Image (cartoon, rainbow, N blue to C red; front, side, top):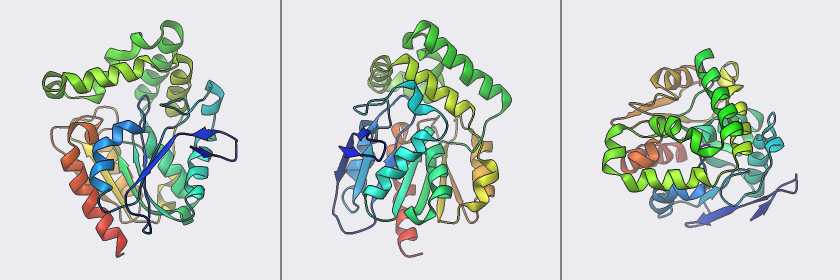
Amino acid sequence: MIETSTRRAVNTIRTGPRGGTPVVLVHSAGLDLTYWDHQVAALGQDHDVVAFDLPGHGATPADPGDWAGDAVARVVLDVLRGLGGPVHLVGLSLGGMLAQLVAVAAPELVASLTLLDTAARFSDAGRAAMRARAATARAEGMPAVLDGLLGHWFTADTRRRRPDLVDRAVKTLLTSDPLVHAAVWDMIAGFDRASDLPAITCPTLVVVGEHDSSSPLSAARELRDGIPGAQLRVVPGAAHLSPLEKPAVVHAHLAAFLASAAVA
């Protein structure tokens, strides 16, 4: 556990050789640090790897108010400061949004940035859908939002071939506090940091699933075009959770990027 300046105990794991620049993994909405299992195992061979549960996810407690404004970004900042230096910051979906906030607010803490299946902003239709999802979670609980999420998270092929992966995600979602989950989606619906992208000056990699309907290729291109020098990689056959559907492909992109960032 790491205790932040807000006195919040943040559930954290750390593995791999110490002494180099840590690689910090920030998960997506509704999941937790355990969904980085493939990346932790692969990256931990050569890197100091840290993953943690965002408030209201996994073993980090929260209430809905913890997701107001930029409060969660401050939690992420505290975790990074606790590591004592710059890190390679990797964020998936919501984690990628928080990573953008941190890279702008505290560039001295971010040696490189990897943005997986995420966006700097959303369309009006996308925002409306997120707020509707939040309202449904509040009124009807987590079972009522499952189908809508799973259809974005995984391709039809993955849902057919990997029922275990889908079942794991369903069970995780069903343990979520619907009021916290709703607050998370309201925060995401209000997210708009496109104007801040030019202020991100560290080496940046943008990765997007070919079939990502939540943060599509157009959103990835906006990130690439807005962040100076950013690179873009597309993961064939993946939807919104490309590190879960295609872990080997995503790891190959990430490992190559980290090697190049280390000598930049």
